Every structure is written in C-alpha cells, then in structure tokens.
Amino acid sequence: MELIPSFSVDHTLIVPGIFISRQDRIGAETVTTYDVRLTRPNREPAIDTAAMHSLEHLIATFLRNDPQWKDEIIYWGPMGCLTGFYLILKGSRAPEEIFDLILRAFRSVDEAQVVPGAAEKNCGNYLMHNLAMAKWHAKAFVGYLEKNAGDPAIFAYPMTERLITDDGQHFFDS
Image (cartoon, rainbow, N blue to C red; front, side):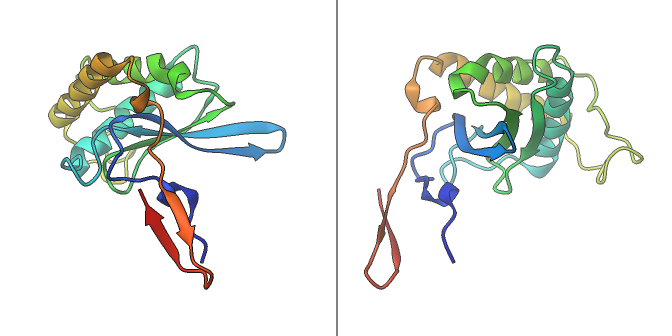
C-alpha cells in the first residue's frame, strides 16, 4: 500500500505552527488543508481530550462566524494525535495569509465564558469538555505564535526524503 504524503513529514522536527498539509482540486475549486499544530509531536504532551474537544467547539464557532472568512471555511477538526487541528479552506493561500485568522481565533478562546454547543442535544459527548484547559492551551499557542511570527519554520513542514529500494521497500532519511 502506498504511503500517504502526510507521513513523509518528519514528525520529530515539526514545531508548532501553520502548515499546508495538502491541496486538492474539487471541480474548478482549489481546497487547501492546513495543519495547525499546537504542540511538538512526540516531544511535548498531547492536548488532553476534553480541552481538545472544547477548542474544537470554540474555534469552529469563531471561524464559522468570522465575517471575512466564514464563507471560506469548510472544516475545523482535531488531529487524531491530539497535537493540533486541521483547517480546510476554499482557495489556495500561503499559511502566512491565514496567520491573523488563526491568531484571532485562538485569542477569542480567552473571552469565552462557556463552550458553544456543549449540551446533550448539540454534542455527541457533551460532558467531555474542559474550558479552563482549552484557555490554557489557546493562550500558550497565541504566545508562541506572537513570539515566532517572523520565523519561517512555523510555516513550512520539515520534510524527509523517502528512499525506495529496488524491491519496493520504503525507508526514511531525515
């Protein structure tokens, strides 16, 4: 089975940031998937499930209500590894072009008094939320983004080169 492109990213070198994960054509439209990484994979603790769930609700609500961007938002959801989120947008923009949107979205978490949609009739696991920890993670990410805004490493994946032997075995060399 062919290895998918996202596994060619050297996860031992990823830093928190905003990266293009993939771009797809759907009809005449380009759709871009961004990796919004909050923690360093395999180097820092993953975000706890309840805080991740709350961040999902809070940021999705912000994005889908932002006057400038709401019509461009296709999806916001957590990564299975709990180190970040995927954002899917219509169009093709460099990560630097959505930096302000991501920064504003995470700043908005600090103002939240409740997690939107955290009721039994609105959420599949409404008891699994942690607003306080969501605020903590959001504040840490905002501080990191502000401190590193001029660092190109927060916008470009570190890549590995996939070596394939004559008999089809895959090896990675970082």
